[in-house]
Amino acid sequence: MLRASYDWMMRQASSPGAERALALVSFVESSVFPIPPDVMLIPMVLARPERAWRIVAIATVASVLGGIAGYLIGYFLYETVGLWVIELYGLAEKAEAFRRGYEDWGLLIVLVAGFSPLPYKVITIASGAAAFDPVVFTLASIVSRGARFLLVAVLLRLFGSAIRRFIEARLGLVTGVFALLLVLGFLALRYL
Image: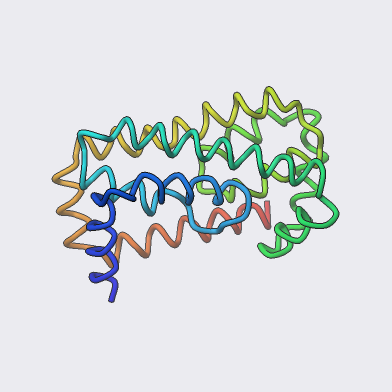
């Protein structure tokens, strides 16, 4: 089943609608959706390495726009929608700690969360709830999300065929490590 899913994603990655799907996933992941855009970005760059920079740009722009949507949810709808989304991830207590920490560490929080496997949607909502400077939030999101997607694309461009062979030979291991990183990101938010 894993092999079939991977093969399907590789076919979709080179389909005409792949860029729109990546934009949608990147947008909603930054405010509510649990699956990161890397799930689409990686096979898209592997399938069409000559379009890597365009793919990075699409993921970055859509992710930042989704981050702004998350910020607006936190700013205007924190007590209803924002808190509900954060509670879905079991991170309400951590979101409050983030809100309090923004006065001293806001820029660093957004930069680290945007680049790392931490659930970025929690940070976007908490940023709005804390009324963190929206210009600084947006600029930090552009830098961190862009750097994250660019790093993935550069590695895939440099080692594409080798990485592709590695992924295809060890698909279960790669999927497990990716899932583990995602879970560790959630745990780091919850317990740190």
